[in-house]
Image 1 (cartoon, rainbow, N blue to C red):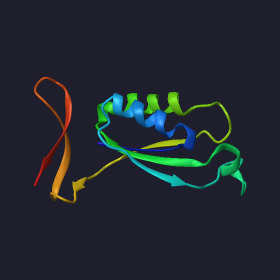
Image 2 (cartoon, rainbow, N blue to C red):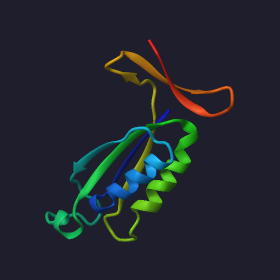
Image 3 (cartoon, helix red, strand yellow):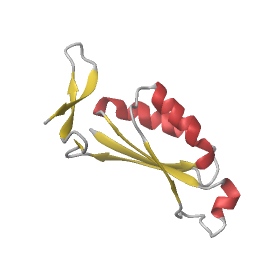
Image 4 (cartoon, helix red, strand yellow):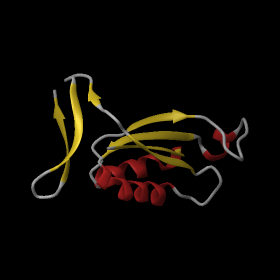
Length: 117
């Protein structure tokens, strides 16, 4: 499993989230963030509306399509479009059920997330 972490323009969050849901990303955490890159200055949110961070856990076989959807739908070709990173996950536990979440493949070859106690 992987965690995909992306910082995108606030004006693109709804579009990106809708695309992620349409391709089967079952959950995404969205947070308003503030930071800086090469062109940062104090009034950045006033110039392009600020930025949001999206974080999601996906199966290995979903990574390429998720990265493509985010980069395609978050891109304006202007400074401040954001950044994306993909991280390996060693372990994921659902707190409510205390179940460990693992990535498995079903007999028909489709990937799925399963839980074990």
